Image 1 (tube, rainbow, N blue to C red):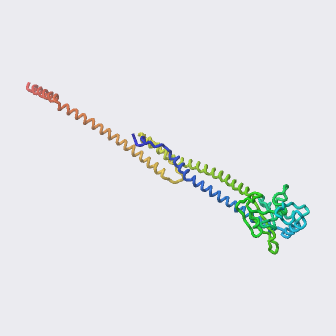
Image 2: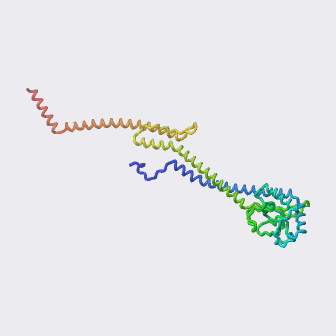
Image 3: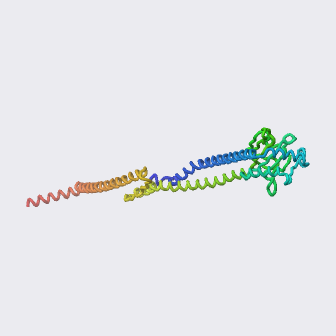
Length: 347
């Protein structure tokens, strides 16, 4: 029994080995690439959102009628009991339509906010209590169902940095829960008058759920794109592995036939890709030369064997003849024949 016939190893084609090897090598690469893509894209989205918020708040402050903003609050605080000096419990209200300064102010905030539909703009001034702010306007005031800060709403936040916005610009890019209105990312910036004095502040919010939706969209689209690319590449690898291994498989089949003595093989397995030869073409040519040499050697060997058989047969015959000649019977018979010849001569 040959070593090949006696092998107990399980058979696994070269094509499958190449395919499995590619899978083991490139799957971690694909996973790492996807993670990098997700982190990079998410960071770019957050950066874009943050830059948009900064541009929005700066544009809103530049185009704001600051004198009207200040006069609005001073007039309402002096003349409207609903906006009396804060006790930290004022719930706010929406001024009547005749208070044009308010409606013009919120109209401006709405106009700025329309550039970024997901953003919510609002303005406020410093309250009388530590950490207290008093709301002035909100871009949601003109909605059919008004939302956001109403006018003269008293608010003390312990979980946001809204109060800091009355002294300097504050960027809260990490989503936070303000404890009342939900989760947000925010930019706060002070509002200054012509003399450079801070008279209030503006905030621009984007709901954290919007950011999360964007991140989910990146995950979903990224998974679809990478899965499609992954399957396509592995299909191409499977096809290419077949192209590469097909000549080797043909050579393996041909070698098996040659092992059975069939030297009449058509090795039409030149699968050149492009005008250049490769190792498979060299192997094929070498295999063809080997077949011719093996066939010729077998013919010569057969002829030699036939000659040896003839020589062996003649040798056997000579030996048999010699055994007959050397036998006692043959010698006695030979002696009798000689005696008979002598008699005939004497007569």
